Image 1 (cartoon, helix red, strand yellow):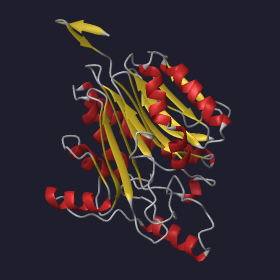
Image 2 (cartoon, rainbow, N blue to C red):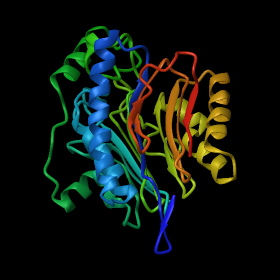
Image 3 (cartoon, helix red, strand yellow):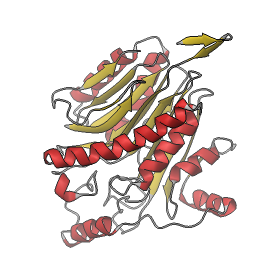
Image 4 (cartoon, rainbow, N blue to C red):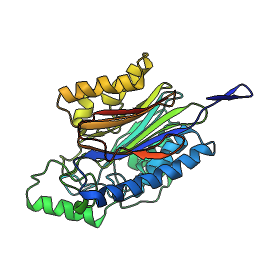
Length: 322
């Protein structure tokens, strides 16, 4: 950190994720996902370096990931059991500890934009009907996020009576072996030391109509001025652990980010949860954790881009300095 005319200047940091699941199939799968994540990190980090605040960077990152049909958010979202797409997203600004989100929305390209608009609203979390009305008020064009691959995936499961409990995390079956738990998320630290986090998802896929994920809850997306976390995995497991809020509260109470991640993921592992998380703290520490085999995450540490795609299966958490 440096001080310029009495104003603290911080090296921006960034970490994003595209879901968690089982092993990517072969080097081609790893490299394909790596390129997708790295392109987002590069664009969003450039925005941070230009002086944008953390919340602006998070929104851009979520938009880019929502636009990539490979990931289960926005375009390329999975279908619920009735063949409809219902998406959820949340945004939290750690500077003023403000949470906003939308639950089970349809016909919108970027659910994170609705969450962004709700940051300044007295009513900051809306469900499907309220979010649809908000879309009309904002005159946001209707958009169909359905892709052919996701439709084919749903039709196959319908023929098999929905024997799978969820859809694939990456919308390219040839690259994945039984992968699941799809969500996207972004956590950013800006040059003024402010933290923000955003999370967006299409849900598990094939679930009961109206099922709500963790992504639009503090369990899956939470930030204070001390730390910020975005989660992915089985939503019910994340909710049961209150994962994001638990990690952030521990850091806020004085624990280091790495220790908070280690303790929280040890507890989740003991409870046989299936989940992952990415995190930053106000010192610039970057951290991630998983109980699944793979966490599709990438980061910029201020000098270079890295990722967690080939982290050892037995590794539960990782951290880069502060």
